[in-house]
Length: 222
Image (cartoon, rainbow, N blue to C red; front, side, top):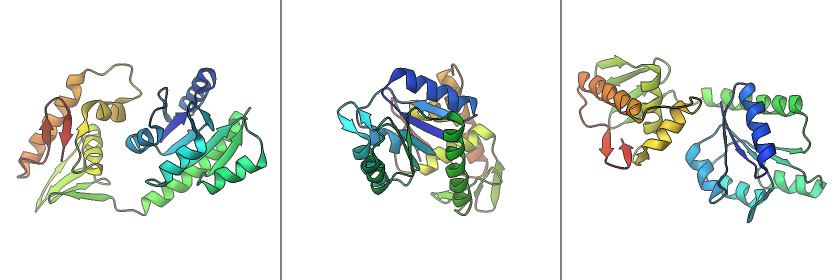
């Protein structure tokens, strides 16, 4: 599961990232606080840890902006202990309100509880995505077109899943690399190209030749 940390204090930001990664979560800790809500929507985390006091904007305002487009779980993590702040956070759409200094085991337990409920909800959704007549089966890790079917590797499935979720949009290469291989120290940019080439070959084997469009200098689109 993927958690996005929005905290402007470098020491706390680093501490949270280490804590969550040690708990086996994928973590991104923002260091750029311009258009935070847009970054959240674009990165599609499974949960957001959001500080209230950020440069030029409050966590309440960010939460409101996020809620206009997403139901991602949002935890306020703040040094503000006033009960009215906590009430405001809940009314703005927050899922939890945790004050600093937080207790790591309690924070992790609350996160795990919310993510468990989220996973149960997601399993009720369709596990088959369709784009231009091509079906991506997430459970059986394969592509189907007409009566033909081809199996996919783990990375091929993740690439196509990401593209299908953003159908009609140009998905930047950097976004795809960050989404797919964030926990690795270094990834050769050519690795993504190799995977996309393999996907195109598999698509061709089932009669699909123009599903993935390359936009030079920009990214890919289905």
